[in-house]
Image (cartoon, helix red, strand yellow):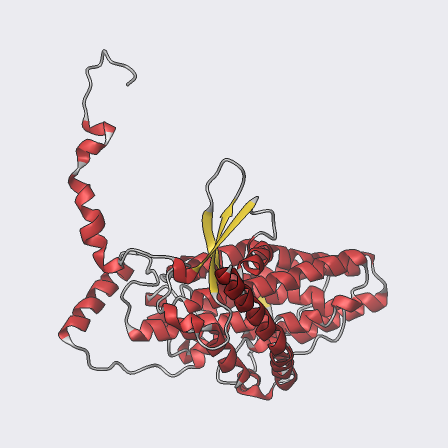
Length: 105
Length: 332
């Protein structure tokens, strides 16, 4: 839940800052976003992340990062950013037809 | 279930919109119709945002307040096994509350604002937690009936149009089935291996929790003003009455396995409908409890406020410590 509608609000008053939690399910796999939580500092965020997001052995490693430190692309730019790739079909292997004689390539 | 008071909120009037807003809304509606998920930073109508904040925060409050009736029995569980199970379950409820608060925060509200709304009585939580837990059998019945009703209500929410809420619900539903099973298991042991006194205790708990559990699904469909809009947004996929009927049908067989009687003389199979008929629900009681006049409303809220106030110095100290360390590290 890294996308805050209004980042400034989570820092109001004496609320503990918000952290995003990433969990590696097991060795060999990448860390994946699990959710977020409030903690006073990084050490506490790691401890709480263990209790909140890995109560059933969901992870073997945890990363936390301050939500305010994440820079995200703007959803309004979605079309301009990502849609141009749609007509670049030549980037996919299926674009190329091979003679039957070539079995595996 | 945990979102029942949604139905009691007034239907909101549509305000006048600019041409640009109308266009954005049309695009939004098209995405919803297409079955797309809405993410936190996507444009959304104000009414959608407000409805979700109300529903998700209320759901979160219910998880947190829901820890109280069961927390009451942790130190009095009959065996070490039951105690560890209950501890794990109550810890799960805390986790569920946190997933949901985080989902609501993506909509631009803060944790402090939500907590303040709960403590001032402005925000509601599920009426079910305003009933007392009088015996150990209540722990079993809460798992079986209350969590059973919760699951029935929550599974459709995993496909809700608001993605952060849907993701939280996936996680919650995955953990929730343990809650129902441990309750049923505790009851089964008492009914099959227990004494007559224990069996009487189980029946008494079923008698007290059955009707409040049926109320968890919210008012009848014809008295649920926000349902149509919520259904369209996928915030609600099955109607209150449909889910309630599903729940009753499921419980009848389970009650038989347990050997308990559901306290409703009108409960019987209707061949024509293919469902069980059941007696009239006391909606006056439901409204009384939601309005703050249930047996434990005052006690529950007072416990939450006390916990929050007593913990204030811990929250402040942790933050002061973190700031001091950060300053020292910066200086070094």
